[in-house]
Image (cartoon, rainbow, N blue to C red; front, side):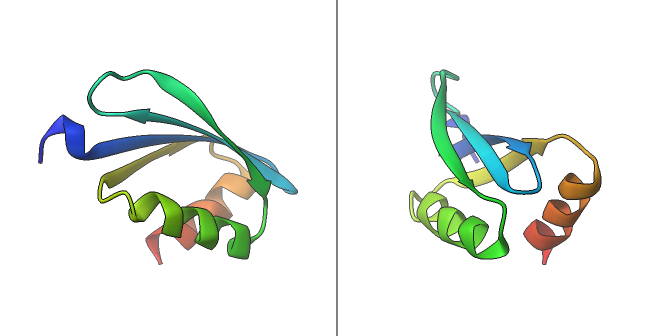
Length: 76
């Protein structure tokens, strides 16, 4: 896997919303992706869009009550 096939996804997780920033593996420039709702449905829709780009996704977010729930969802 080359670094050009990787998307780094940074998330600021809150109960009601998730703020997302993305950096690709080529230039490492971080850009704001947007703010989504804090529901599993909102995350599922966002993941579907990100996966459609054909890259491997690497996630980073803070631990905490909302972060642990998100982790369990992402690995399921």
